[in-house]
Length: 438
Image 1: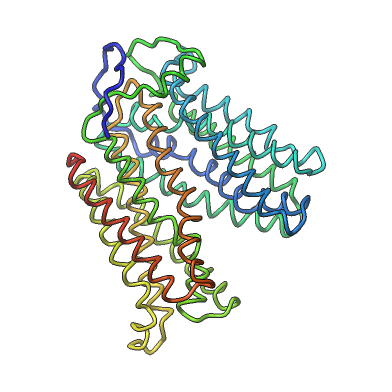
Image 2 (image 1 turned 90 degrees about the vertical axis):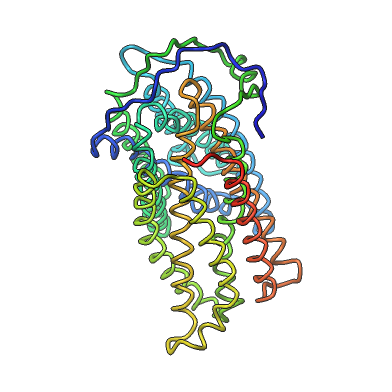
């Protein structure tokens, strides 16, 4: 809810820029997401599990992996907010406002990323590498997040967020495929070098593209670390139902993030596929979902610039809810198809993936509309916190729902999707009732 706690002294806040940016500038100032997501997804999903597995026993690897990721993500969340606050109070005449922090954070990430190249992998090294990577890369990300509010005209927030979504998807897929191939050939060192080059390279491109725009007319008062720590707990009233939208986003991502984790088990339990069949089906679905998501991430963002954002998010969430209620019935629907139930699943899952893509891009654009220009770094980081916590909390909660009756069954997946649908419906109620139409 909106908490009016010690609002800062009034400052001169200029109106958002009215001149539209060319498409090349919008692309250049979004490409950071390609390198960042290639790094985060491949490190979280492939590199860290492989490193932990190589230095621990089969019985303890899950525990050490969970602890390492938990500490790393926890540190990253706090660092992201603090660094965002510091970036709000930082500027230089020569190098810009956000760009120096973006670049310094990316460059300082590299030594931690490359620890596994120069030293034998041990459990302390894997821990230090992951936590350092998360901390420093999130310093860089904290300065990237507010540029949507800083200098992208509000009429282009949608297309800019859509391009960020596009690069997020491409970066995640590219990082996963390239790093998986390299690790399958036991090329850990080369995999880490490739990630470092991708992350720093896209950061440099982004920094150069934003250089003409990365400045402010607002008076900037420098802030030290301890003041930033205090400042993170001081929230001011914001327009348009910002805090309600963050709560609504939390509910959305609690629902939308769970099927990505458990879709393999769905294919086995509900569609009756064996593990080999399910892995092939999962790969096909992944490729289709990628293509669909790319189109709808950009298309949804662009459309939101013309028809508004709140109602487009609500529409996408309602569509995702309908697909959630359809997933358990796919085997029954498949009896009416001459090709069986899997094509039905592909259609339902593709509509679901397209809804997620629209929500992810338009959500970012709407947050950019609502945050105050003088504290965009701080409040964009708080918005990111809501989705991050949801993405971290959903898998164990929904895992418990699936396993409460033993091995996953059609009945347990029915409960899984009903609870997901309930979360999504509640998010619609919150956003429709509390967030201003934009």
